[in-house]
Image 1 (cartoon, rainbow, N blue to C red):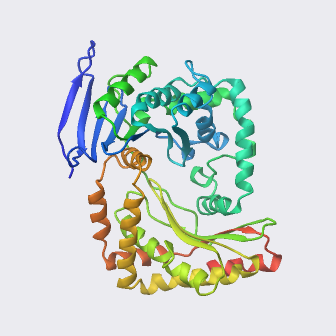
Image 2 (spheres, rainbow, N blue to C red; image 1 turned 90 degrees about the vertical axis):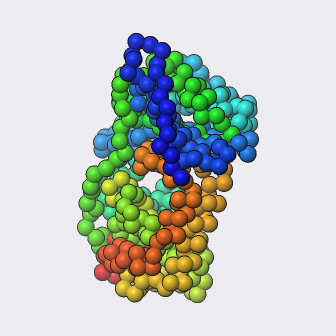
Image 3 (cartoon, rainbow, N blue to C red; image 1 turned 120 degrees about the horizontal axis):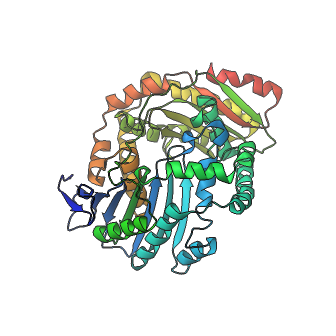
Length: 459
């Protein structure tokens, strides 16, 4: 259940109107699963979920910046910056940052996506104050020194090389480029060798100052925690760093807008000497705010989300043409993707693509059976709950929900929403999404005649 209760706490300063507003967003049972949110003067949001039954806590800070916020010459800057925030602050060296968390047996990491970046630490509940201090220090006090930029450049170039050595990963970047073209959503999160080599400390520093303002950040914590204590510690850390420049500033809203994908029927091939051919066949999907996303989630699960799914049964179980085959969805603020991935021997690529295309066309025209839909609903509900069994996953859920949707949904409400999906809704979204002409991305050692036939899969 969602509660509208709230409290406000005035700052003990001359800024009389600058107050912290606290809300209970989800009222748990006996405090367990209770989600609370405080918005501080200066626009920083702090969201927590309390679980007294565990002995761990995960603390994270989400930044409203991803690779889609980059210009072509800045491609890779968001990810580069993620690395640099671990390299040292005014208070800590890079070794101090890592050893502080290692000394208490915790784990710390970060990830960059196309629309957000997250930094987090998972520790024992008694060590949460340390995690808060270290992560907040990284976010507010990074030095971004020239020498660190030059050293880390080599590590990032190695990461790009590692991705290029993994075509099963790289084919998804190729598919994004196939669908979006030369715009931010079509460019790789890591950047390219040329763009990474061209980035300077000064440019990254300006990018950091622009996008790491408190109004662009969401703090999220989950586990055996006390919301009020977390708020006090975070507020003290940000105030100590002088991060609050404007006490009247409001948090920025979730992304919105509308984007049109490139024309359908495109084929992109990268010839590479690999043992397998890696393919993604797909089409435009739905934005993450579209209410039909629930039906699309059920459709995706039934079509390629598990061992009983249509694609797995047809491609692997019945014919043994691929070891890995699945479908997936990617939802952004204003658009989305639906894709089918398979890795197979180059000689089998056309058979695999034909089967996948036939299944997409079949479901688009005739839909799924009620049994398939019922099984997919149950699978999606179970996997959703099982995926929230640790404090890290809970921190991810509440942090991303606040940043991307500006609201929270309880697990019970989430399960109820999945259960409410009807067969007609699934069939309708199948006609709309799967009925589109697909595009295709391929990485593998295809010969000229094989490459020439790839257009058959999108005809």
